[in-house]
Amino acid sequence: MFKRISNLIKDIYQLYFDIAIAISAIAIILIAVFMDKFLYLQACPLCILTRYIFGLVAISALIGALFKTKIINKLLIIISSVIGILVTGRQIYIQNMSIEDIANLSGCGMPLNTQIEYFGLFEAIKRTLAGGPSCAEDGWRFILNFAEWGFLFFLMFLIITIIKIKN
Image (tube, rainbow, N blue to C red; front, side, top):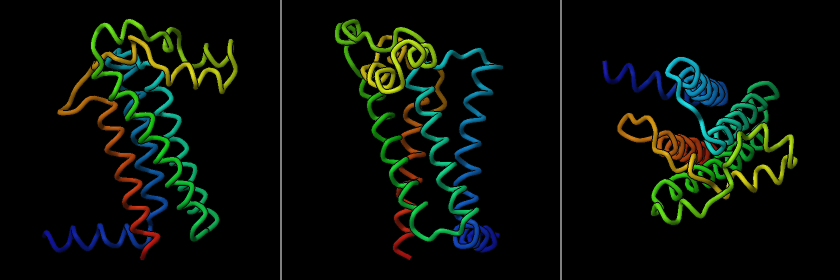
């Protein structure tokens, strides 16, 4: 049984790598949206930004699946994953700040789409990355919180893509 599962994972990794990455990134986004809508959790702007980065990973993987590129989409997955690691790392840092330091943050005062409307894309991303009290909330937990799970998934995408390039 273990050998069968091991062979299945190996086959998916070798034959359907790009599709598996795309499906897993899209599944992460759908789970997050599901939890927002049906469990009534409010995602902070950093969480929404993280979803967009998972979307970049999925699009990068789909480019590889559709156009059979060998290295370009892998580099795009790596770049997207590194950006995701940085964003989720920032959120984890904010979540571990002291209450006084969190009170001094003012970047996440309004939803990401509203910030983009008022300030433009780059200023909205800059303000979102500055963080705020809503980004410091730990919220729902299943062993880890959302930011920590996101960090692990981006790290996993990065590592398996680097291994795929080396092979």
